[in-house]
Image (cartoon, rainbow, N blue to C red; front, side, top):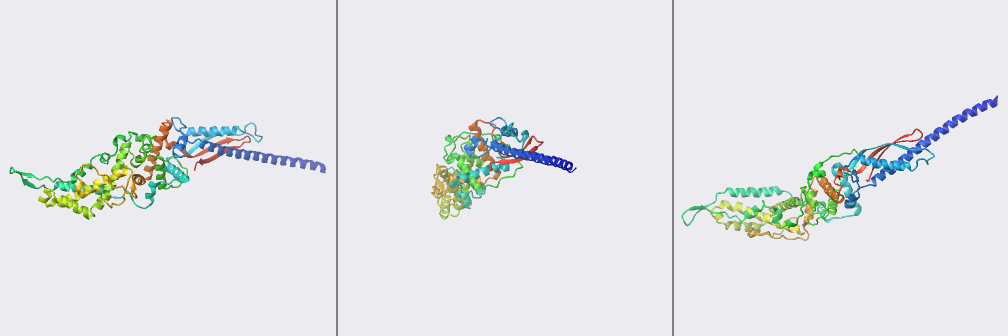
Length: 462
């Protein structure tokens, strides 16, 4: 009887033990398959990121996957197909040879990406600054940005507005009359020497400063073809990058892009930094706008200094007093004197800009004058004074770029990148807002022991 009980007990015990062992084995297989699937997902997502746009990396040192994959139309489906390919290939390595069962890929969805344009171009900016820091690059152009001195100054419009108002005031003063040899009364012309300089304000400033207009590149673009004309907006819910240093970013721009002093021959636009500063459709227009702004900056600096220079004020007053109309109508004396001083300030500004374009430097604050009141009626624009420790054209350009709103600066930089990559690769569909830095994917797979696995991963370069 005892033997019968023992037999039944052992049979039941073995059945239970076998069930436990089989359950544990199934769980082990399932967990092993899940672990294998997670490893395959990690490897495959890294492989997808390994297909970065090589020309963009070689030219600008940036890591992005181009969703066009050199095709005409970029799309997330292209990335999904590449990820699915790598997943299938990695799963196939173990098929029919794994004692623990096979895996089957069910579905792949890339449901979120972070592009170069996200965060108002912050993704691109962050990578650019990382490149500068990793390479240890230092640019002289950005030194002034961290010094606390404002090289752009203020009051450009006020200075020009004050001069215009003054010239209108002079035009409203009645000219004196004098009797000629025939006994007829006629007006005495004012012959204000400042008129010539004032007339320059409506001329092409590039011509005034002697820029080699015939050698300015003829490159032109359509703004709507590039990011700043599309403004696709943010498309990602992924966590954004930390805010990068603007000074370092501008150093990156000077390292990678051309300007008037050092144009890039392999770019659609040669004066790329001038484009970032002004955003116009051609090299000529961008250079013209930068030079006009430079002239305005220097004019404001000079206009502030000219009225406190006693020698210049005395010379201007003496020149005004020598005019017949002024001697006959003293109401002209003060405004004409001031107009001569403004003319000195403006011609001095043109001479300084000429120095800057030729590679020289000018002082931040006006100390010495090249243009004197007696010279303002002369034909040519005098060459200014080159100051070895002064501010260069490139530093003024860096200041203009620094003063731009963040989004505008970043988007225009991306415009230049799009121009270059399209030109270098021939891929007319290349767009930086379709270049992926980070992406999130959901991967569904099935195992051989009723295992269904959902892998949710986010991978990126940074």
